[in-house]
Image 1 (tube, helix red, strand yellow):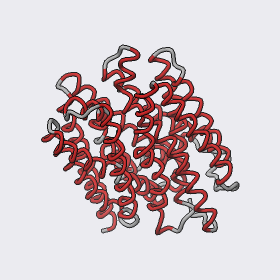
Image 2 (spheres, one colour; image 1 turned 135 degrees about the horizontal axis):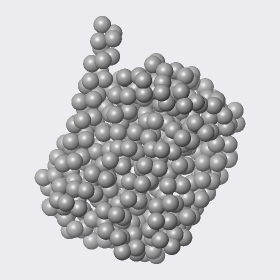
Image 3 (cartoon, one colour; image 1 turned 30 degrees about the vertical axis):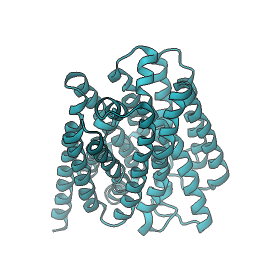
Image 4 (cartoon, helix red, strand yellow; image 1 turned 30 degrees about the horizontal axis):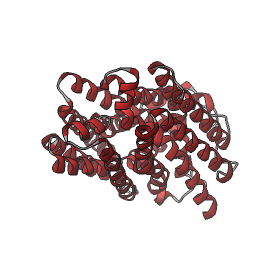
Length: 397
């Protein structure tokens, strides 16, 4: 898919609308991280069971991104964005008024379907309204909505949950979704490039290409490693590092600031040669997880390590998303949209894998052992990256 350049005003408006919607979606994805203790108490479930609100959501995105791409390829992009936000609002309303934990999970799945298709098409739209040398930065601007959600949305939702109950946190998300819906209506232009109907053949095309598969695996392990720890960050800060419940809200806010800084830096680093920049980012993430492992029972040094993890946690996202699009454009140009959708799935396979493994480690060995699972996942991503670079070099030679 080639870049469709609009005038600067239209491009800026498009990126702003996508960022606002991404803020709503980002708040939804991670808000249950701060609500785990409340959900566990409300429904009398264990902490690792409450963690399913993170992993089930990720699985919903994993399945939903390619499925919704197959079903919605012929729908005009602006109309699809509007439908997506309506689905998002519906999912959060289901969760807000859920009478049981199972219905909460159902609401999370509905919202996750919206998340998957939104991230698939918004990344491509962002990359196609700017010049080629700014594609990673444009994707980073769109993902700024996610990072701002981590900075403000997640802590604010957590605060609302602690102050007035977790149900109001999901109502808060519904309101943000309505604002995103309005932004799409007013700022997204008509006539965005439409890839047309996508067939199941696109999935086969993607998985038959070795380089694309390597890139997908790198996304899953490199991004997912953080979530072995981050899914359980509230109880880690409270039970192991000794911070009060009210202090955790502010610490999540500071963590989000670090995420925002990392996302911006990562976008700039990945504008050229994203595969090389990703090695540095993964190395930094593995190092921060190692520090958490050593200092997880210390309040000051442990917190510093957690904040370093925040710096590197989302730094790799623009590069990973740009890299899959770049590789797909060269290797499978007819399946770029599906490759983007499957990369969104890979992000969330990583989240699900990281959170599920973190839950198992927590259940059998304790919270303090979760960083070591994350380190293993990130090291695997570094090895896969090296393998991918090696394949490309051999083909050039």
